[in-house]
Length: 190
Image (cartoon, rainbow, N blue to C red; front, side):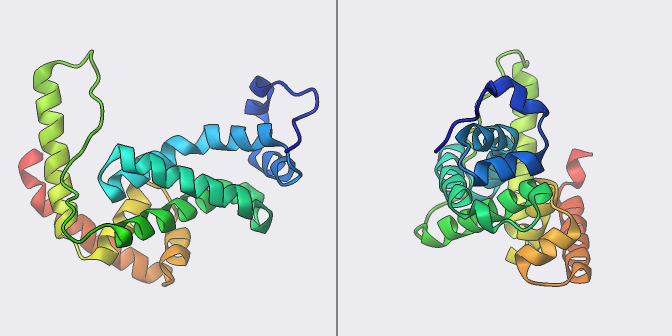
């Protein structure tokens, strides 16, 4: 992989996604590292919600990024690199879940806690996350996946429809039902 000629890593932060993608396709590994720096955190947050574990999410995101590097030249719209990466991460996450033994649980949330937060706040936040996790677990798979793609991956309705091979109107209906169910189940946390 060729290095960016005369471009220190810090200066790539101001470069558009489109330019970074074109440079990465041409073999500029520094450009791809900048793409990873921009979007790996969002990918990890989304995948950890899907698989239920930060440690497993790291493996899934790494696989997704390897896939992205190999398939980067197939990206039709370089300005849409974020949603493209999120779709790859989504496919990898759900493939990971399909490979997981059926008795594996999604109940564990192994996020590190912030030392500066008071213990009471940590307990409340953990209870809220547990309640949200339980609410998500009760949703039908298509509603859960749709909700995660919208709320965590921040994909548009059209992008979710493409990812789930359905129409945007179906996505709106799935999200509406998912939100209603979650709102009812999380009613005690208002």
